[in-house]
Image 1 (spheres, rainbow, N blue to C red):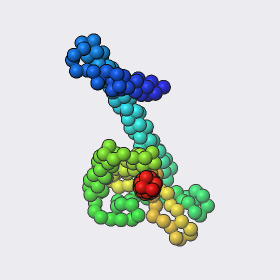
Image 2: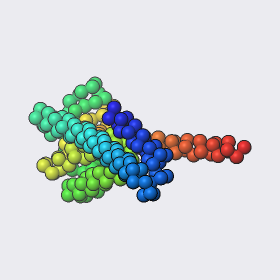
Image 3: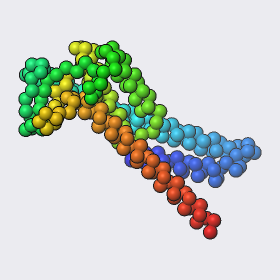
Image 4: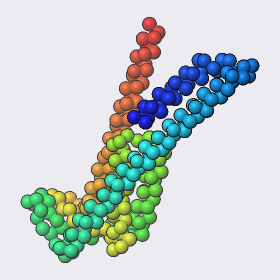
Amino acid sequence: MSDELSVSIGGVAQVVEQRLFKPWADGSNPSTLKIYRWTAHFRAVHLKVSEMNSAGSNIFLYLRLLILASGVVALDRITKNLVAKSMYIGQSKPFLGDFIHITYVYNPGGAFGTRFGGNFFYIVAAIFAAIILIIWLFKKKHLAVGLTGIALMLGGAAGNLWDRLTVGQVVDFIDVGIKSARWYTFNIADSSITVGICLLILQEIISMRKESSDVAVEAGDENYGNQ
């Protein structure tokens, strides 16, 4: 409601300024000049209110993203602690038949069994990736799906970084597969990062389709105008 009122006030002020007073605001009529100055001040107040509303919306948006990322970290910590307290390293228990097992293991490397360096390498890489994501968050205009993806990735990166800083390697426990054909064991943080990447890819696909659609509409309007 406040946004609509702000827009309405600004619109009225702009009409008054542009159509009634500005053409005669040359200083020859003191009364008209005074009204024009008052209208300009009114417009400045409107712009300030709009900026405040926009800043408030951005703060609320970033707060929601922070809550989502924090929720990922919390869920990751809770599940890892439950596994660590109830199982021993290397133990595996069926969770959903033979398809999903809870298998308690340590992963000194990266995702999908990669080993590009030691623990310090992955700590630096995680911090660097988080910084890039945060910069990208503020520099680029994102869709809701993209913002969700960034929050999930930041939460997942923080969850695994916690492990590397405290125990020197990542705790994994989700074991998916059929009989002896098993996928790499992972955790909630890994899942969050993977989903986040998929959401960012989806954002780019949506953006490209929208750009193609806008170009097609502009081309159609131009052709129609030339007829």
